[in-house]
Image (tube, rainbow, N blue to C red; front, side, top):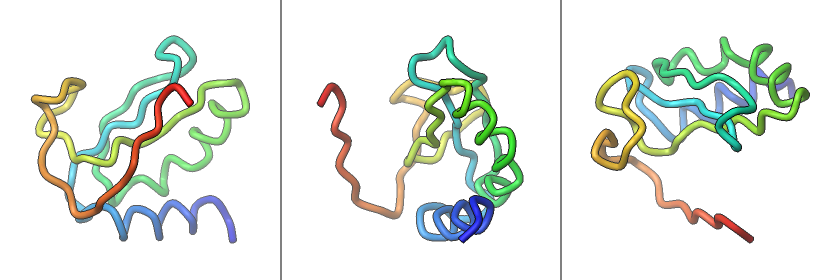
Length: 89
């Protein structure tokens, strides 16, 4: 399965198409942060692949964002899925 297809399927499971999501790198200085509609995530496949290959470790935040440039807990809305976040393991 192609990366674009994988991102389309993932986005359909996690968010409504109009939700605003944040894509960011870990560590923060390794790539570009972006806020996009979840329905447009698959359009970012090539860029995300290039940045990840360069060491960006990009991920999309599971909770939708309430505003562009919102990066704090207060900027997050409710979600549809249950997930586990294992930082520092």
